[in-house]
Length: 109
Image (cartoon, rainbow, N blue to C red; front, side, top):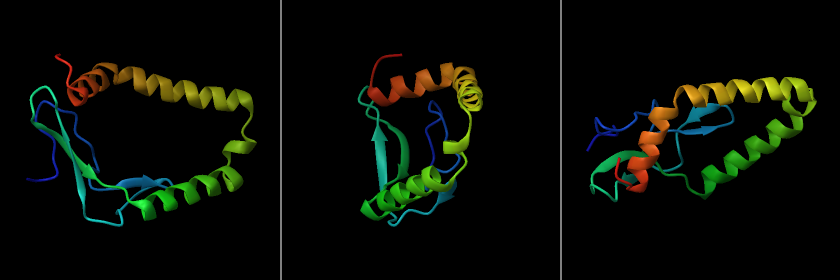
């Protein structure tokens, strides 16, 4: 089965990648995780599986970003502004996100 989403689901741009260090990167394994709807028993999506190596890379990237990235030096006001922007993006996708979470968790929609 291809690495795509069923028509009723939300699609991901890079279901075969992991977001580490600000980039979509190839995981250390070709293994995938099938997310199955407990409600319909249909495939919701197939995503990349993260292994220990990938987790180590993600932790190292987060540590690097925290120690040497701009966030620790950003003012509280700037942080609040950035977080409000993220919240706005999430609000704009509220219906889409509610649908995919409901589908993934198996609740009737």
